[in-house]
Length: 252
Image 1 (spheres, helix red, strand yellow):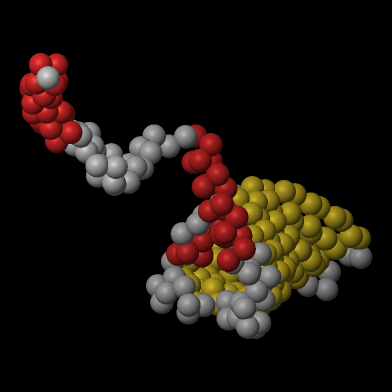
Image 2 (cartoon, rainbow, N blue to C red):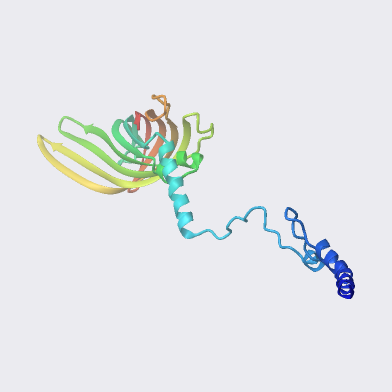
């Protein structure tokens, strides 16, 4: 009997401790609470999205430039090469000091629009080109006893710059140019039936201005008619010749 009372007393003493221990234990489906100290600590939050890389590698810049040049080539259907036939009036300065002598001029000309393949800007691509020309003028003078026949061959390379004042969609552009070349002169002098041939070469400076027309023929603009109205001067030695010319051709 005495032992039963002792066990009952120990049970009464241990019961509050067990109750306190079971009260702090979370249920199986409840989250484990953090302590006050853990809840007071600052938590680091991740950024919503990563910041873009500020340092651009050299490989990326080279790739973008190559892509831009490639798109420039594919977007423009025109290659930028022209071929034209040229005709006009050549006012030759007389070597005898008698003003000018009017003669017919004809020639051929090739044009390379080099900026079309090297410059990405739409307006600048239209502005720059270079002409390669060959023009011929003949002259004859004298009497039945003494006469002379001369031919003048002008070979020039003349860079030019224009500006599309009416916009790139209207194919009319004023331009100015300055170039260098060579003037070859062949003269045949006949005296009493005896013919003597002379020839000579002089440095030639070409300068002038004009209007260039490039209306499209094909729907994509890849083929165009090329035309000019121009006022050009050829300076050969101490003489200045003036050309009032027209030309027509095709541009690819």
